[in-house]
Amino acid sequence: MPLTRHSDITDGLIQRPARISPKYFYDQKGSRLFEAITRLPEYYPTRTENALMQTHGADIARAAGAVRTVIELGAGNCEKARALCGWVRPACFVGVDISADYLQQAVQRLREQVPGLDARAVAGDMTQGVVLPPDIPAEGRLVFYPGSSIGNFDPPHALDLLRHMRGLIDNDGGLLIGIDLPKDVALLEAAYDDAAGVTAAFNLNVLAHLNRLIGSDFVEDQWGHRAFFNDEHSRIEMHLEALEPIRVRWPAGERRFAAGERIHTENSYKYPLPAFTALLAQAGFSRAQAWTDGQAWFATVLALP
Ligand code: AVJ
Image 1 (cartoon, rainbow, N blue to C red):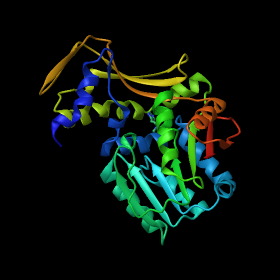
Image 2 (image 1 turned 60 degrees about the horizontal axis):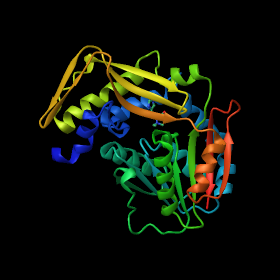
Image 3 (image 1 turned 30 degrees about the vertical axis):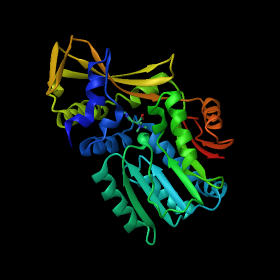
């Protein structure tokens, strides 16, 4: 890939504070580390969402009506898609993900696991607009955006994305979306700073990915993982903190970091359900039905036009 395609990365690195988009976490290694995160005892979202799907799958499928095509954004390992397809029985599945090789393998596995399913992989950055294969019919589309990934975007960008999702479906379609809810700060912070250090490795791995993308010379050991809840914005923030004075160079520039200076790598917003439903309404989804677990940690929301 030509280096000039990554001016967004170098622009972020020279900002004060510096920032890296969380989409760069997901190289092959990062996708694997994220999978390991989903199995950590502290990381409740995935198992809570999976349990919701197990418990309420039949209700969700009934409420969604006739679904011809499931379109999953950020499909990753396609494990959630497999469960959803068991309930809604679509003819076709389209997985969209930024990590192309990883997605290909996952879609191939899904094809083997769900005989007869017409499963497709679309590699691309969903924030740049999803382009579906031209032969996917407009009728009966269910957009699936699980995992609370919408939390990576601040509310105005989340609204843009929800509007884009609304544009992918007709009036007979729907959106099934996972939302992580606000909860005890200690629980939230442990989920993003686990005892085994998997989330730290995931956060640090973005530096190795950047080194390959822009030809920078980040050294992982010079950085520390920081994760905390920002109450004002109702979001977990992840940062990489310079453990010593650091000078990072890449072909067309450089940046110096003082010890203690940070690079902001991720936000993970925790929306109260009414706030999220209001956002959905603004995006053109006037009806919403939500399923939550007994502790109200996570919600699966079916949004209809
Ligand atoms: C994939 C964005 C839903 O915010 O919980 C997990 C990413 N980052 N641990 C999240 C993540 C650190 C995850 N999402």
